[in-house]
Length: 83
Image (cartoon, rainbow, N blue to C red; front, side):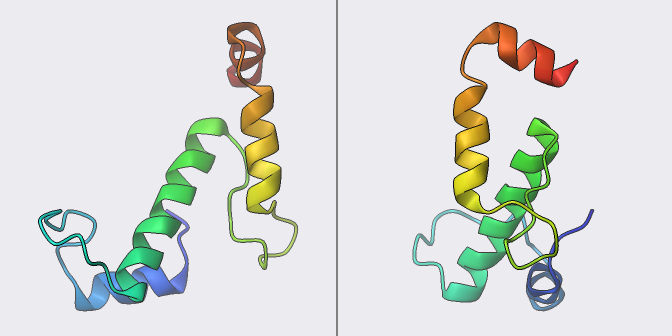
């Protein structure tokens, strides 16, 4: 799994990641960023797109990902993309 070093560092100091309790809804910035990056990775994997942060060379920004996701709204286009 290719996630950022920030997520890896968060996991180092919080071994329960990504299975931490949701009872505490007040995430600090490090925790929020780690889950955000994990979500980007999972979404990119499901959509078969490069969802790395925009600062990574050759990757798409979040606006590009939204446009691509919007283009996959109908079933035929989605099936063709995943084929």
